[in-house]
Image 1: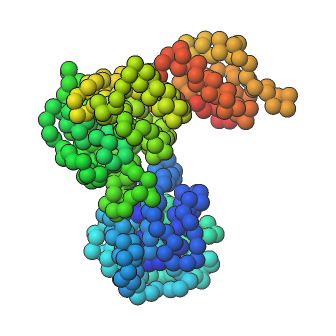
Image 2 (image 1 turned 135 degrees about the horizontal axis):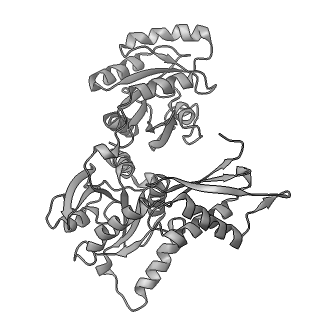
Image 3 (image 1 turned 60 degrees about the horizontal axis):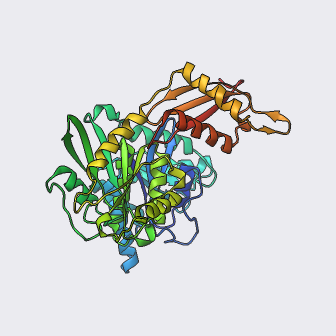
Length: 439
């Protein structure tokens, strides 16, 4: 199922966003003393001892407040609970057990989901003893922490990871190339899947947000098996009005995490947007193969320069994933749709390329001879040897005298030279360094 999801819920002003920031180790959620600050739901990877989950911050649940905003927050929190593999119920150790905590606890008991009661703002041993009163919620032993002072956060992370379902190796899932069709709402994702299948197997509608679940569909083509994943549309949080669409994003992130290749579908009539670039960035950071696909190409008025102009525009907007193949298609007419699976198969092969250590270091000698490594304060970077340590995505480890001397521009030069020599089309390359004194 990709990365498991952990939702943080609770009544207003118990420190949910502070806890979220502490667990992801960065200040992403806005933290204020005033209740109701968290409006747009936030999600981010949380990693501990080699395991990663998607952590979701939610707004405060208040059953007594009946205005539209409070009702919307409750609906959003409920959807986050529905999506979650584990729920962290945050409570305030300084304020003690409140009636609203009991109501939230009752809501969670009815969900039959694993729950950890996290007693926040616990700053000393006596407060840890006092926190035992939250045992009466009937949701297990409370975990006393202080998000502000980083108290017992490691213990909480240990318990979180123990409660999450075991990681599933993609090799245990269906054999075949897993292709996720992703993009903003209403760019034609379901239409593309249907055209690839040659029949209507998913709902097609011109209403943005029709696809609410990520749907796996097996397709056999020319003796090769593909698993197509049709996903809900991703849009900017400021544009996501319906709570279901907010959490459709989580499902889409899961689909990307599980795929071999992601096809980022864009609308030719709208060109590239900032949100398209954000989705591409997530695919890149996840280490997945990437294909840029411009849909609705049949609706564009063309001359002999049109495709080149579009390509230049898209390459400029997606310069950080310049390795990604670009295809122009029409899911409506079927124009060049067959290229999507052909390129997906090619990208998967590229992601699995492995260079022998001997050939890699012969190439490395040529690369270094052409452009000398950088130096800093009279000390020059020395690269002793390199080895490819992984595939999907390809990962290279460079043994050097001092990793601090590896400037990002030289790392980019090394990447470009590797691509020029061996291709690696459609996949990110990971370049790591290890100093001589490092184990």
